[in-house]
Length: 234
Image (cartoon, rainbow, N blue to C red; front, side, top):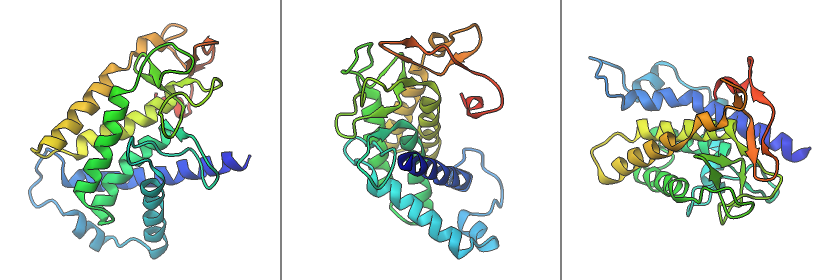
């Protein structure tokens, strides 16, 4: 129960970072708007209350400090020892760009962490084994071992909604790192490959609806995403 509360808190705080993402994206958007205000001037016009600024900084720091710099995986919960959540990774990828815009880290630091993350997910094994895979058909298991990056346990499903939350961060990275630089181009190429590899028709369990997930033992989960809920992201 405690772990669930921390998970919900981390996801809620991740959503707060996502709200800040448009400011980061606006500065680097391909469309050039004459006399568009910079991020700095926007902050001057609409100063962030100290409590929100502190919350944003500490939220970013959680993703940055708790993540595995080798593979980019981010834990599901805190402070107890945790497996990684692919949804947390998606929020983390968004947080790194926000961190650059707020001056918490350098752009080079964000590039290196983002590259480590995307390289891992691009190269991670995709197959129908019980224990030796990170995902299947382009989707990923909800929970992964923080070190190996493979399925954490046999009760963990390939999750369509959590893959969607991961892809949100992947696509943010693709949009944010837009400079004519070898590393930033690699980020864009990896993001595109990861996104396009997802086989959505495979997860359509009942006609047009998308299943909530899949497990090697139980196969496709019979419940599908429908209605006004997080499935709209899917």
